[in-house]
Image 1 (cartoon, one colour):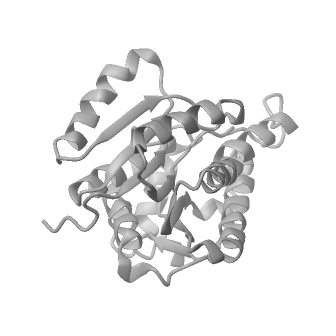
Image 2 (cartoon, rainbow, N blue to C red):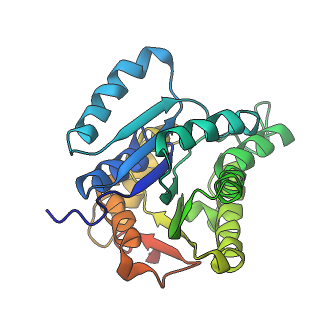
Length: 260
């Protein structure tokens, strides 16, 4: 296997499962060293570390921290960790794969409150902004570095119980487009990946999980769900030199699911 990213470094926010983990493994297979922040109960750390061993087995450096990357009050300490582990190197990729939102309806006893919207928006969209700013201010980005994040069809299509996440995903897409324009003088590229319905831990938390899976399978031209590995393939492609002119886009990775 060609190791396209030998010696490069990626910072992944949310890399212990799903799209983030699949992307980390794919990038490591091509030589990229990684710093990963994830959020999990302490009881799950050993199981997660065993998954990370598979990444380390690819012959790369990996530093993983069970710390909440969405908390702006922790940013200074987390940034210091990143600088220490980079040891003078620069970041070639910032991948935002944070799934921390409130799945509640707009009406009823358990309806969404303003605080639910605020938490979801901060975690799933604005955290990308404050991490990007922190890396820029500390001159930690390599020139032509990539800033990637994951959105969903929910940014345009409503679904019961998904309103707060829909708002956050729509904001994430517009934030990415603004970054693509305003950060271009620094040589940075920013893009979103819109994955099709993917059977992940995050999907299982959405109301009517089984119904969503069945509907997505039926409307997909290939009669299949999107997999984390297929999405990771596109993360890999967008990190390649040949993808340097792709900037400010929302790239659908769903096998055509959203067409129907």
